[in-house]
Amino acid sequence: MTTRVGRRPRSSLAGLLVALVAAAGCVVGGVSEPEGQQPEPPRPGGGSSPGAEQTRADGTTSVAEFRQDVADAQSIAERYWAAQFRASGQRFRPIRRIIPYQRAGEVSCGGQPLPRNNAVYCSAGDFIAYDVNWSVAAFRQVGDAFVFYLLGHEYAHGIQARLGIRYSYTIQQELQADCMAGAYLGDSVRAKALRLADGDLEEFREGLLAVGDAPDQPWFAEGAHGTAEQRTESFFRGYEKSLAACDLG
Image (cartoon, rainbow, N blue to C red):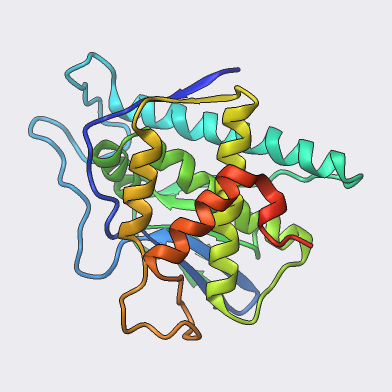
């Protein structure tokens, strides 16, 4: 199956931060929106529910397109990682479930309620969960590429769990997941499983520049993700050089 990541009007990915939260029996790596920022409000005439039929000017139904992109990103990630595990003589187990949710606390990871405006991988239940209203709003604002990066990064956390990779510092875990997401996307493009439209790589670059830590964030702090330069370098190192560049051992 060939999937095309289409291009929408440019927009910043500012506020889409990747976090790793440790809780009892639960490792959560996710893309979230910082406190105080809200997702783009629904357009007039449409509801905010994930089931709302909101048709774009080009005639497509944006929520339906979002759902299809999530399914495509999951399918490509599963095939990609299955091939990597098979090549190394290991058995691959796909992530058990991908769960959309709408309300804070609707889904929990190891007893920890998940907040709104977030997407996470939960090792305790081996699932990815995402706030569907926030994700659809970001999808409309940023475009299809957001979905493939989002799923790629969260799936990378699931692969880290399968390989027993657990760093001492959050920043190490997150930069490696960025690299692995880049490898998944770059290798899928080279294998013609995924086709990017003109300008998508530049949108990835602009988005990654927007999600770096604040200048005063210590690199060793819990929850640190890396500077904009570090995150961009990690993602594109994986995109250009594949998994060999991601220090998987």
